[in-house]
Amino acid sequence: MKSFLLIIACLYFSVASANMQNSLFSDHKSFSVGDILTVEISESSKASSSSQSRTDRSQNHNMSLQAGQGPLSFIPMTGMGGSSQNNSKGDANTSRDASITSKMTVRIVDMDMNGNLIIEGSRIVSINGEEETTKLQGIVRSKDVSANNVISSHNIADAKISYSGKGPVNEGARVGAVTRFFNWLF
Image 1 (cartoon, rainbow, N blue to C red):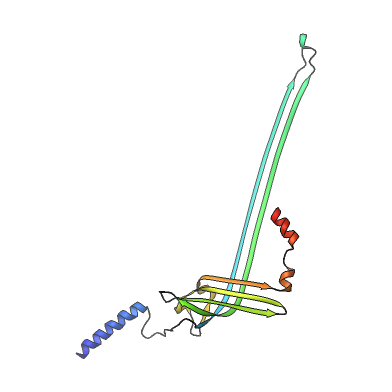
Image 2 (tube, rainbow, N blue to C red):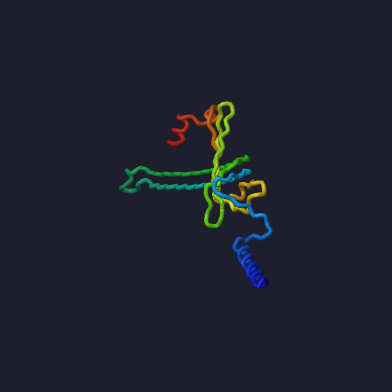
């Protein structure tokens, strides 16, 4: 009877561990809504694009008549001509380079059916009248979280990371209203 219970227990734990995809002997951390995680943000992106176009078109039309002869000698020599030319050339280049490196703490706001953690957080830092705001949202697999509750931003699915600032320095770098109007107009 004891061996039968032992076999049943082994089968149960093997099925349970297969469903959890973890070993019975591994260190499985349990998370719940409201727990906090530290995120190490290290993101960079670089993109560039260029385009060139050139169009040349030329037309030339000529027509000439000879002077009249015989009874039509009163008709003078006549000539007509015309030409047109159209040239177009366009060049466009664009380049963008951005990076952010930061560390912030976020809160687990929900868990999905697969056990993934839905995280969200914001951080506001004010220095000398400048206010910098970092916001982060995303989905994290619990097995990607390290033993000390730290996760890299590269392991966040559907990550939304925004960084913005306001203050005198930010306002000084902003394009003026007249320039924005002319950029919109043309």
